[in-house]
Image 1 (cartoon, rainbow, N blue to C red):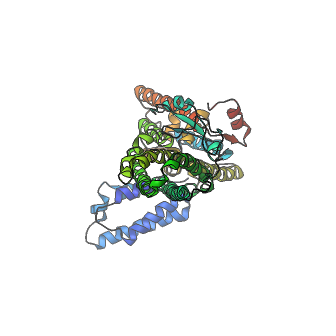
Image 2 (tube, helix red, strand yellow; image 1 turned 60 degrees about the vertical axis):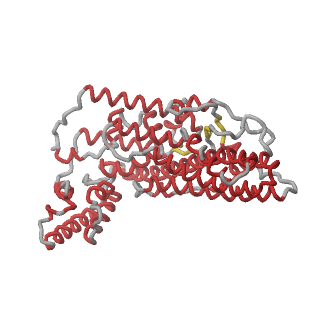
Length: 478
């Protein structure tokens, strides 16, 4: 049975020493831990033992016992040694957890999401309630999204829920023979394209730190889908900019500064959301997933961006300055659409990963000894990043009931280090009734937030599995 060691990302954090480089022996141990976390193979386990012994010998040769190493300040090397020597535990709790983890694979293995079907909720000044230049009034918005978004704490004034299908259908702006207007919009288009690429790269960098997973690197066909959205923004800017083409230089300079300021403010905004990849108490799990929901919806994003108008207006005339507010609204729209495209592409890749893992389980007709279903550490490293990064997954898992009861679901986020000392047949001390009640309350709260998030996202999910598809048809996840 697979051993529960120390999660690689925690190992790096616990062994880090400010201003001190990692030795070759320590780097080899780092790599061996990561390899075992992914594979669970005896070969990689043997390499951990070999690398750990090499590191200990190096410390002894340095003139002090390895236990006195500055990197062993919290006893992490002693803990790893004990975990390597401990016998694998199998009791009713670990067996139920393995089945719960298997439920995650079953739920998502046959699932798919239509990446071009979703909605974004906008607070900015782009007008989707009436006619939009070049669209013949096909775009319509509503305040319906405000109700759904409120479930995750979003404060919205007059919000519009806009379908990506319509956004992406926008034609290129019809400029006629207006060369000055054409030059303005061409410049702004370049700025917005760069902005969209920066947002995508930033989102990936935010979550890559906890990812040794192939699904998080999957990009999908997102770029061709964003061009129609940029055309939507340009259509509206073109109508507003036409009377001010005499101030072309001011508009171009002002919009360049505005878009740059919008990106800087987006980075600050997204980092302030504080996506927490740590495991632990149910409240930590719930709050982490909720914060990611708010980031995905873009709660308060327009308020965070609108100050960028002042930055751009310093280089613009009074007439041109009025256009910059629309540029900021366009940046809000693009950021929210890019997030949805990023999110849906990652979900599709995660579903494929689950499909491959579940197929191996069905072929073997049992959970293999080296499978991550056996290991709280390995499973937590794999699933935690997905559940926190893609809040739809947590929402679906909770609502389905296929991933165990409420407290068992939260146990999947924990590092089960306390189980290393449990002997077969030993009864674990149960949590107190008040602790259980608080945990249930946290999850009930999260389920309500999850319903609001799924509603506001507008995603269309499907499954090749009849049981899961039946849940969708019966609006079980609604």
